[in-house]
Amino acid sequence: MLALHWDDIDLENKTLSVTKSRNEFGIKKPKTKSSIHTINIDNTLIEELKKYKT
Image (cartoon, rainbow, N blue to C red; front, side, top):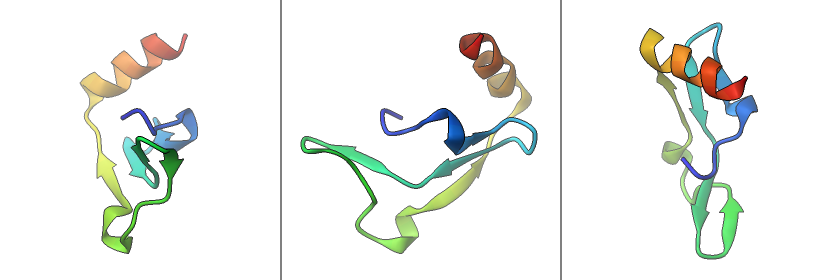
């Protein structure tokens, strides 16, 4: 979660894109293509993210 940015979250389509990872050296692309994926998120999380962003 520490590698996520707001542009990774699509509130309209209810998805979260995992395109980066974080390790002791910083944030970078994951080692494998299978680590890059999109996750569906539910309405509860969408509402919490909207509150947090404001």
